[in-house]
Image 1 (tube, helix red, strand yellow):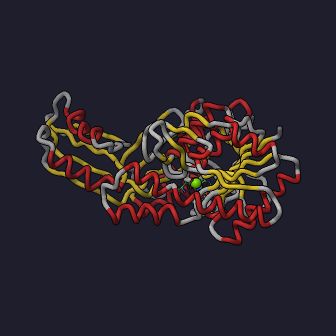
Image 2 (cartoon, protein in one colour):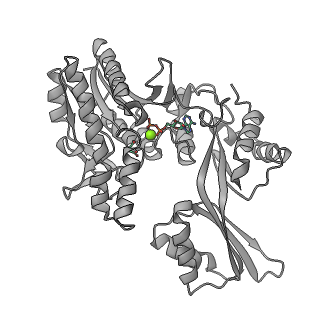
Image 3 (cartoon, rainbow, N blue to C red):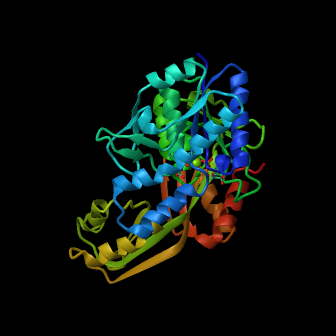
Length: 404
Ligand code: ADP
Ligand code: ASP
Ligand code: MG
């Protein structure tokens, strides 16, 4: 059986007109003799609105109920797609995660799929039906509905492709592929034909929203090839695959950035063993993710300044935790909300010397001050003032010859 998984994102199902277009795409695969499993996100804006409502009810909205609420948008879009396919004479129906069932772990708000029961869907497609499956949701061992984290429909599609041994997994979205940087922000970004799981994972984790990072981990682990395509334009997209399938390894594959970070500096912290651990312990206990960290020793060697970044959403809570922390002494606390993290990503940097220098000198030539630096094997990130974001993307894109 030639199975294909087609996933449609929020903008692609954002209006009735677009849902009609989705049905046309699905039918084009049916005509090529594919058995199609459709996965859909909620119509654009719906999930955001549901999250807003939960916050209006309570800042501590119950996690189990949060998952029931935020995953409800997918029910609506799936029934509309199935309804349109029915209207056009095709046998189709919607499937909620729990009806299949798609089994996830017990974590709420960012669960991972651990199993998918195949028999009902297999019977259905064998009889010629087109199942339209809700992305982003599953059910756990406690029979509670779970959700897979923002952008989680990507993970649903990839795991369905894995369990059903699909020939293809196509992610239809509002851009026609993965670009060297967000093409909506930077017009000269060029489309990447093929990208490795490793590079895509870094780019996504560092801010490229086009794919959900956890879904790329699932794809890499299960060796699922992914095609990213536009649901509006008939153009070749991007293939996400294993490193071995890629011949032309560029030094830098792409540039990612964030706009939702905050920088915190504790000035004049008494320097003694274990101090960093005492500062970060309450963050860990409160599930606050600390990202970049830098520590400077002061001139007298007795004090240190500790700078770190966190998500802007966590800032108020973080400052409260610091102020409440009786086991640390510091003179001052400075907070900066106007920061962006810009990262260059590429497996080629492992074997190419001088990449760090080129990045820093390109930024220096453009008069951009670097606030914090962090690196890993295939990425270099710098924290800069948010107002310099566009300038820095332009400079780095030029430096690494990524313009189209
Ligand atoms: P969907 O609703 O289809 O899942 P998303 O909004 O999650 O779509 O992801 C698509 C968006 O990702 C694009 O509109 C684009 O602005 C953004 N994006 C960020 N970085 C990149 C990149 N490197 N390449 C392509 N798109 C990117
Ligand atoms: N609707 C969900 C969200 O907005 C899942 C997805 O779009 O993939 O995050
Ligand atoms: Mg998405």
